[in-house]
Picture 1 (cartoon, rainbow, N blue to C red):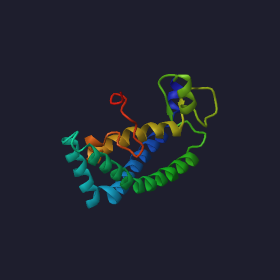
Picture 2: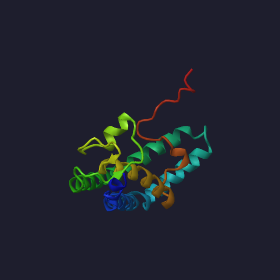
Picture 3: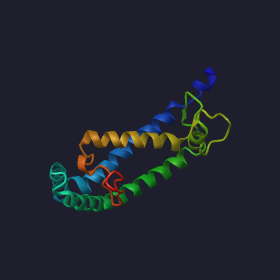
Picture 4: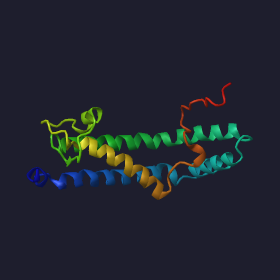
Amino acid sequence: MASSISSLKYSDSLTVVGISICTAIVCEAISYILIYRTTSYKSLKSSIDRASKKLETMKTDSTVSKKDLSLFKLKSGGVVALVLFVVFGFLNNLFEGKAVAKLPFVPIRIVQKMSHRGLSGDDMTDCSMAFLYFLCSISIHTNLQKFLGFSPPRGAAGGGLFQMSDPAKTN
């Protein structure tokens, strides 16, 4: 047991986590340059905030502003997706077939397929780069957006291009 833990290369895990942090920072910088610093975004955000405060009276204006904001963010999303695709391909080539971390437990079957993707061997506590990068990307991206103040306005929660109808309002 001690030999398997000591043979684990912490540098691989730290490299994936570090690259995930750097990628999140680069993606947020791209979003800032293309979205958050523009006057169009600021006016759309303030419009959403105003519309959210007046709830029912400005319901249609809020919906239009949310759709406009989503379309405005679409161009940055394409650039960010391209950056993430390139970084993931680079990491995949760098850590192909290597376990970059050791899980302290054996995950459930569906998670095993993700956490052990591309690894040989039967030790299900080995963690692939893809799984570690996925977990880091989700947690770091969300927290970085909150820290930098780039999280969507409160009234824009769920305000994407394709909205679901509210089942409570349908009679």
